[in-house]
Image (tube, rainbow, N blue to C red; front, side):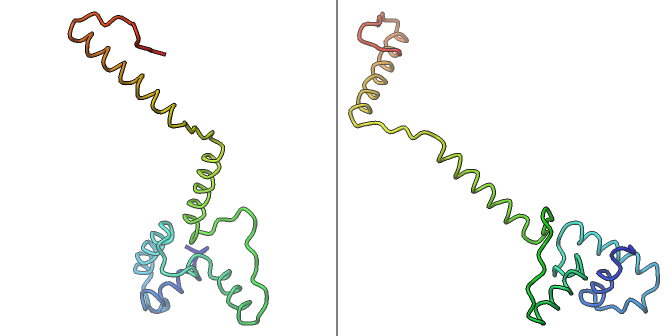
Length: 141
């Protein structure tokens, strides 16, 4: 509770419209449970409630016209994590599709396959009727 005190107080004032100085301690703990549930499920109404000091630094940089502070390598931005995951999966699918060999058949090869399939079906039908279809003319390779 002490680590997220500034974010919690900002959340109380802006979302719940309550003054943190006038709330009794037991009500404060009840509200903190709701705050932490929203925090843990990443359903806060604004990104500043996750890290208030980082958000204030960013806003100060924008107002002053300074370059925005860069995120540390390996850090996770909770607001666009799902979008990054979708992009990685899309890229992985593209590489998998491009690495698979393309099987293209000519029209004559397709007709030959249809003929072989028809011969197999016909031989199987004759075998089920109890007739000796034999293997003459029917290819099983």
